[in-house]
Length: 280
View (cartoon, rainbow, N blue to C red):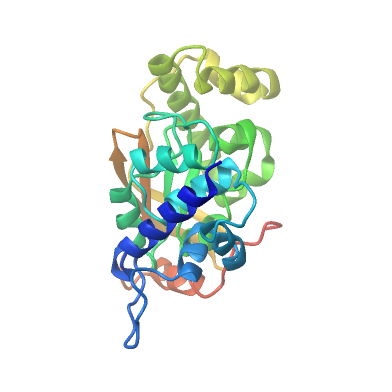
């Protein structure tokens, strides 16, 4: 770990960013060059003290998850992210499909969706980044570990995961998720994460095993509309738009409602409710 170079690199990257670059208001009396340390800390999901100590070359060695969070908070490119990991004494993370790095371009889009439920996911259904309205709508999905990071794994092994959808819609979602995993397995092979997920689910879920044996492929939702169920506001009828990043094999999901509809009013209410209840 090169503390001095790490601190200098973080400082220069912080000072190169403007509030507008990350979706923050500038304010009338701003004198700081670039972002403030506390702003980077918030964007990275850590305390100001922790981030400040690293930038002042007096903190502990950051863990890989912490470095990934800082890379997202500072909107680093892949080359900059790799450099960050090397300075901190860690190996370089996986590049391309299967990696967790969210590109600066995708980050800029998400920054401008602060009042909209949106989240960035891998092709395996691992949530990498959520807006606050997305957390309010769907719950916090970025803290899972292991195979449980993949939504398809939680869908077939954790009954609470299904509560975001009305029960009548569960069979369709099960078919879509199973077919999607089979397509991923076809692309990446048995030794990939898709293979590990398929093997684990075949052993854990009779429902998944039955659907898997049908060998369905290309099963997609009937339309772009989704019915979501929230413990505080009930059922919402939403449009789900997808933006694909082929370089990173990631997807941006954006949920919207028809203006003036009951679901539109519910979405606005959710922005004030905060995190979705984990017990709902």
